[in-house]
Length: 393
Image (cartoon, rainbow, N blue to C red; front, side, top):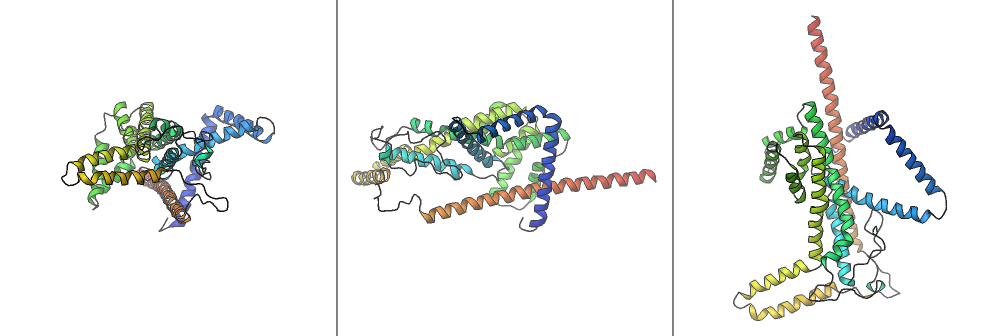
């Protein structure tokens, strides 16, 4: 895209046209019932949307739930697809959403802040509870005690649906490498990822990149005995090497449902809950309180620090209470700003730069794959022509 943008875009468009034609022909050949069912569902949906009646509110509610589910699943797919080059949507969207909800719940002393389960951060939508004053929700339900107000389990239940949907998306994002690797195994050709790793081992890279590449190469060459438990463990632990799990399982003939079930359980259930509970613990001050207690205990053992600990602890508690206290309501003659303009501008710039980088990587990869296949076809045609001429002579 940077060296030859027009040529790269041309190959990308040709590859997408070729993919769409193959998909349409496949559906027409083998998916007749699927096409018929999709047409009926689309027709019923159009009728329900266009005709006025008492069903409108139910259709709108269903539409909100569908947008909510597709949004978080799409973010999960974008996070895991692309062999490590995906968009880090947990850091950009799910993590901040959990943190903001936890802080708001701590400030208000209650968790029933959402107007509906789909009242979350979305593409062009800010959750309704984010800009509301705590008095609008009512009196606190959980009493303030020793810096802890809302239990982790109560907050977890409120953000669990979007976290699981995001985890389902990450599991779906691991399927393309599996199918590509399995197709390469069936055809008997060597996978591009193996060739790239072999080439990268010979390059003069940095120490960290060389070590990471060596670990990936070891995983690819020593994974003939993958089982359900191994895949589940790899999917359950946040690690940068699971992008090769699909390649390994497809290359060594692991059944699809064994791979997908283990990946789905590990990513959508185990991993997402680990990450969600960690963020809630940090924003809920429980992890910080444990660290504070351990640090105070260690400092109390050092001679000379014990007399200053009560004063230091009081200052820390005052800062914490000031931070977790609800924001004072703004006066009616003042315009309330929910976000600082400079911070929002910088954050949006970072997000758009990452999206642009992600798009460039997809376009480059698709164009290179298309060009490689075309060159292989030309080489094959030339080889056949040469062999035919040789036999004729």
